[in-house]
View 1 (cartoon, helix red, strand yellow):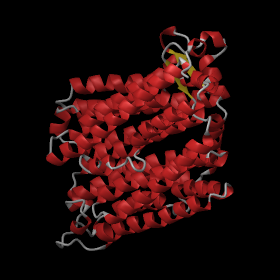
View 2: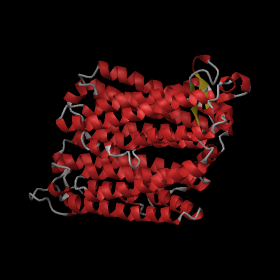
View 3: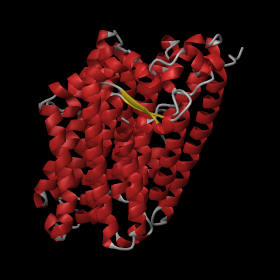
View 4: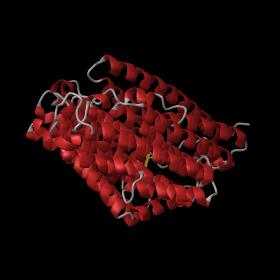
Length: 512
């Protein structure tokens, strides 16, 4: 299985090298598109293998777990890699018209592919130290993309972005060191059993809180989210879209993985904190969006609010709630990336992202208006689009556990999301342009128009498919949630028949 698991990581890295070598010509951009398509194909092969065989794992260099580097894929990992491939291909096609030759010469496509490799690696790694490594790969490449162009506002946002993420990294490494000292292992499957043998469970909860904060920074949860709206509106729209779709979701994935597989000894404490974090994240994010009047700033704050829904599913920690979290992850990546792509087209033809400076798009660009309404309505939770089913499952899970207050917050935040989306619609699409212009897609070169609209239309169609035919996607989320709540198959796939004395647990010197 090693090539099936390694290929989605190898392809972006190889594409990055080739794209960098040909960065000063048109070949680089097309290599990026081909590489992204290759990643999508490889992710499809991986998904087919996981659906057929169950959880699959491979030990790199033939070093047996838990001592070597392990790559492992269950249903959650596999679907996240597939969604990464879909989003990566959509954005790489969009970038054909969005990224200018100067940014290409500076290495945009190489950085983009390295970012995809880091995201995929984080989804497939089987141990915490290598999760740290993939986080660093993502941080380096994303920082490069964020400041590409060297504008003052980009540098300002980039410094805020990298500073807080470095703090998160230090906290993550400290937690890794303490956890290794307590258990003698960093393999996540091995840790599932090792943490149960730790005598000082109170110290283990402290370590769990360190991981919660470290991953919370990556996921942009309350009160650690301020770096996101300060930076996501500054780079090229292709960069904003891939960031919005994937980066914070890696943090959410890490929280889901560790707090279902490793840190489950005191759910009443840790997951109650997560529940409050989810509520505050939803509220502060949507209030920030309501206060903004810039297209991308509104969408940036909505990333924060929607992250709260995903954390809510983890915090409730019931089978239905985990189903909702998985479903919401998949839905949100597609919708949020698409909205940023729409914002980019609006900027190209209307001249700005400030709502007070644009308008008239409904009359002069009706196709774009329709393509905006699909992800906007889905984000707000209009039936029967994908966002409706995601919110419905999470609200039902809240009501089933008698957490009425968080269900009320989730519904209220949904209403506030509608307000933000209608504010964008009214100002950018319905109200005439303040200068009397009629921005039109016909002003774009035909080649650019195709490169910009094809990814947006494709993601909108995918959103409609998930919404109109939710049953197979919900069934998949149910199977994924079952694997997360009962990690027996995950542990068996990684460790096999390794006896306890051969694992790090037997060698650990448990801290007092």
